[in-house]
Image (cartoon, rainbow, N blue to C red; front, side):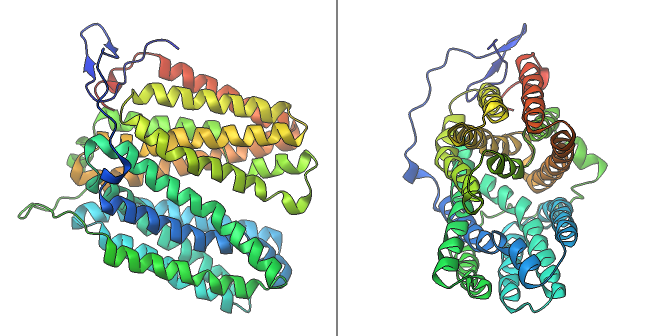
Amino acid sequence: MPDVPLDGPGAQCLPSACRLPAVTPPPSTPVARLPAGIWMLGVVSLLMDISSEMIHALLPLFMVGSLGMSVALVGLLEGLAEATALVLKVFSGVFSDWFGRRKPLAVLGYGLGAATKPLFALATGAGMVVAARLLDRVGKGIRGAPRDALVADIAPPAQRGAAFGLRQSLDTAGAFIGPLLAVGLMLLWANDFRAVFAVAVIPAVLCVLLLVLGVREPERAAGVARVNPIGRASLKRLPRAYWWVVAVGMVFTLARFSEAFLVLRAEQTGIALALVPLVMVAMNAVYALTAYPFGKLGDRVAHRRLLWWGLAVLVAADVVLALSTHWGGLLLGVALWGVHMGMTQGLLAAMVADTAPDDLRGTAYGFFNLTSGLAMLVASVVAGLLWQYLGAAWTFGVGALFCGLAMLGLSMPARAWAGRA
């Protein structure tokens, strides 16, 4: 890979070009030295993901099989739910900057998510399920940007990569623990959906209690005048480096598309239908195991270089998945996909924190999440069309092509990457 100008701590921008200076890396920081609030926020994410995924892993089957909803209606509901979360992430981030507080909005978002969980167990028709699903996504949209901004506020600047990596690792652990619990309880209780949904209420309630009692928000400076975070003057304060990170996040998402295509590919390789969901469990397990180590590495090495290698891993995953017709190749491709996620997702969140002003972090995360979500929608639509008309190999092959273009862009000098973007 050619020299790249984005560097970690101690980066300098020389007159001729920005290059990685010869710097002795700082000594490694022990895990225990991360602030307690970071650990608490990580466990909060873990508990809520366990609760949500226990329900989401079974909800399509419940809606179609038990409530008689059509598949088309399920698809419409999921689209509306995710769109709701995307839009609210922007507004909640902006409001947290204007209000000057992150935790109350995070508590509101997690609390609303917890309050919807009993509704799934009590639902007797499509109306209550639709309402519960939409309210659940409203809660996710409210809490997302303020929570990420709170992580950035609590974490020391030199440990932001580790902090976001740890939160992402614990969050993703919930994404595979939840479905495993759901499968186990369904086997134990003879496919009693409502009983499993009722159990999901417990980790959701614990999540809210832990956030309220265990997380302390840093004090804000007194006497600071409130400003409109999305006013022209405020938006001008978001530097070019931040908008470059937003653009990179969009390109990464275009190159990755939805993990639903991993499940479809697993079905094509002949894996038993009952075992297909375990593909996502495997991917999330690898993601959870790698997010913290790579987040910590991101505090010591050039961000741009780590992003480049993350794309290289995704190219390898796409190639393996495009060519594989055996379950062994599928598992290798899924594992590489999880490594890519672990290398890049926490790092991009840390880069947003590094490039956005402290008092505009909520707004910055809101715009970042919105643009990445829209890119995911476009990427998944394109991937689906390629799959339908040209075949699965084309879907993953074009994904690898997008990765190559992104790698080429990251290899080119860019003044926007000067310093620790």
